[in-house]
Length: 279
Image 1 (cartoon, rainbow, N blue to C red):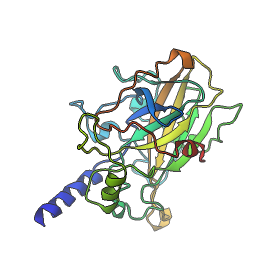
Image 2 (image 1 turned 45 degrees about the vertical axis):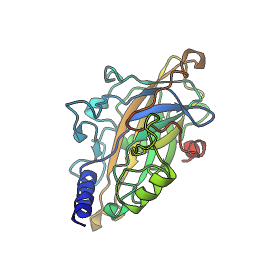
Image 3 (image 1 turned 60 degrees about the vertical axis):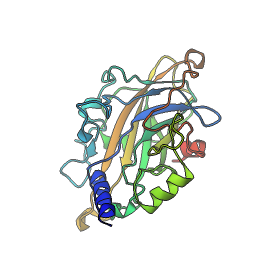
């Protein structure tokens, strides 16, 4: 009993000190498999880097206030330019029309919902925006963009739940226990191994994005409380800014597929096409 209580306490402490950001980006083929090499956000600091801390990638808006205002850039200082790609962690290569997954750890926001009290939904929702321009827009500007269209590739790409329906942190909560059984995530070389299963946001690159261009993606997670500010509510957003290299399909080596040893999953969620259309 004492061991169980200690384990749960440690899980809660990890949750309290951890939030989420896009860890990597993958192209999805017509059969739902991840293909090609991973791409990474701007200013990426890998968790294996000795200098890594949770704060290195966490960008909370607003800071010190209850509401967003026009002093809040959509990208953090380490991600406010297309020039801020970390060496060794390249942009994702995509073709117009490709479906992609932006993958992130849920850190207990899904599998320990009791720790997310006062939220309209325990884990919140994610909006993904795309832009053909490189600009550090204010988050309030971006949140008001219209959906992308057949003649405008800058705008809202999708809005979907933070919880993709299968992801989990390995903990002793009932949701995690059930999902570990439903969606096991072993390494290919160790069939009995267990790994947490990352969440994903699903996006389709607009067909009209020009080949040879860079397309910027703003991942914005809304985890605000559901009360009014007058009753103690607070707006709470976390963002990750990513760029993708847009190329001709023939020039991308989709065959050279690698899996992430921390998340060996090789397929996207089953409803990735539907999720990419939701807004």
